Length: 249
Image (cartoon, rainbow, N blue to C red; front, side, top):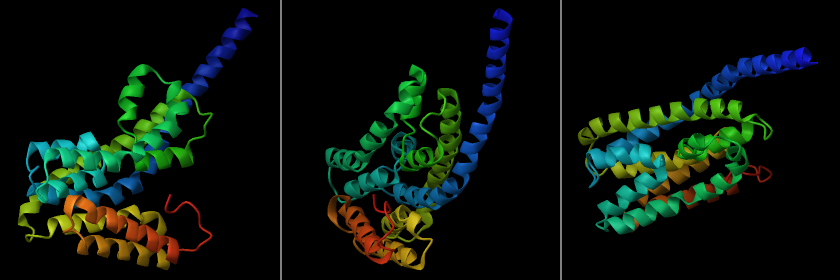
């Protein structure tokens, strides 16, 4: 009986070890198109940072710390408008509050993880990682395979995000004055509507949202980004098929 039990344990461990690399590869595969979509946003954001009050190391370090184009951009816009650091921080926190909902939804997956992963992995909860896990990882997945997939789908995104912000900060001073914030906001809002651009009406909605953000970039406290987002999402709901659910949620 002991021999049989030991054999069964060995077989189970071997299967698990064989499955772990495949989950890592699956995460890397799913991250590839998302990373490509993030690249222009990082470049535009870096260009906006380059001549903002956060130019330099403080603006760069906000990239890996926030991991949020919307919050980072809104914080820069608020400072450019002359508001203080408190207002900028409050704006960034408001735009990042949606992460609380993601965290609550992912709590059952993190509960069985070791403490080091709960600390490290929680920082990598962003819109893209939540969507990839929600769509591709079953709820009953083993903790080890979930960890491999999580790092496979998130670390490439962080690497691309930081690299493109760095490049954007280098080329930003060469762009025409007044284009950096407007261009970054338009690209950001357009990217937020990316799930809808498969259809012609979805592409039109993304263009409307990006154009509205570009035009309204001068509004105080970074509200141009918020208004542009609302315009784009409203256009998506009106123009994309009414029976499609979840585009604006």
